Image (cartoon, rainbow, N blue to C red; front, top):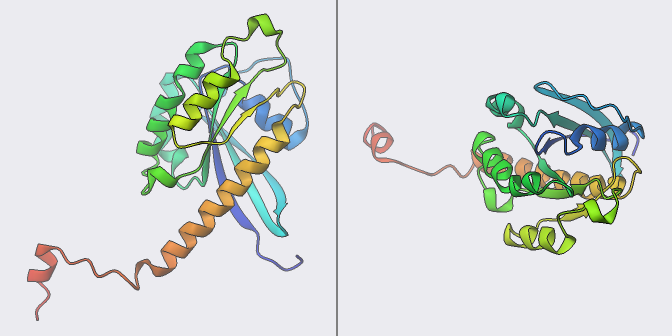
Length: 206
């Protein structure tokens, strides 16, 4: 593995304010959880070096603000992403209902060329709460993921570090696969660019 070039993977975490996006990122990267809630302003990112099947990668995880007033910043932060993590709070039905809006907004803002095949991972966070406070069932979440193209789904507790590493392992693998497929496409884009529209054909000077 020594001497291998590291692949940079850009991952973005989206979801309503207060669902635990920052806590998930902090738990995964630093193994820490803070009880004090502080809303993210704009966006922030942290890197993590990993190895996926002996390939060295640096996962750059972008944590974004859930408040609507920051959503206009989306274009700058979303572009170039290799995977998008959609997070909701299992005790907050509104945050679950908004998942599809976050997904649709991301696809538009990030200008994804092949939206049907872009990797998303869905996380239902805060499963450490008592069962009576849980308002979104696993079945309901799995049904949504199935309707959106069989998206991978994890239930996590950022507080107790439940399933966090497992979820981000799938995120990293999905991002690497996307990055490699994009590299392959880019390599061949110029070589097979035979599209001729009316204007360019008329001006080609044949």
